[in-house]
Length: 306
Image (cartoon, rainbow, N blue to C red; front, side, top):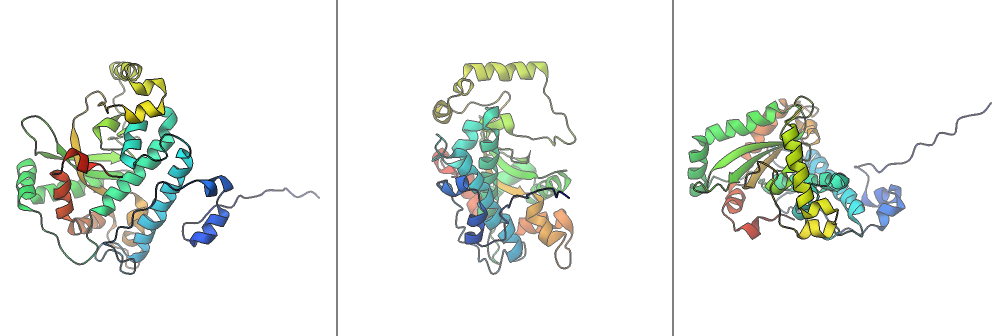
């Protein structure tokens, strides 16, 4: 009797030690130079997690393991290409218009967004109060800080699918310090230059607005720009144009709503906390408003995030 010779390929597990994981990785991935590495985020004590927000296990999954996985994939995809040594934000902007770069865009944007989420968090029991100028501008934009809080939390709770909820500062003439809330789905980017893939609707429930006029405008843009030529170098070095209808803005804060971040503690953990809503409520208490303020009022060059 013949037995089927079915081989299940080994895949690296996120919880394996580094040496064991490297043994199971494909040889091509092992040869990839790691130009993009996981930032240290020194405000966190791995043994404590993020007190009042994420347990040590949840932090290890959502930051250490997941960020490592995403950047390993990005390094493999960009090896020996023009994107290999570019910072994440530049890769996101340069690849957002090219369907053939969709995978690179997704991994670069996800790594960037996840870093943006964690870097603006307090890693201790300390509470950072909102600086006066930022508080004044936020109240002007939303009516009150409580209104802003509820809009961010309820937007995150209502998202039917993973993504990010952003607080962005608009750059409209005559109103330079107004803020808005912007949701993006999956690895969608908040940057105006990447709005071809912003994904500000949930593809599971909304067909979007791909009208013939909109598609024609997008086609004309691609034909008129360096991105339509398929030249990665030109894409990276070209000025970042807006997608049709784009608005100049600066992201200053975001909330990660991907399930791998909150399910461990707020759904499956000991005591099973109250789901994504409680996760978002606890996130609000851990915001480092000093860092948010620095981003909001920084020079354009200082806003670039690697």
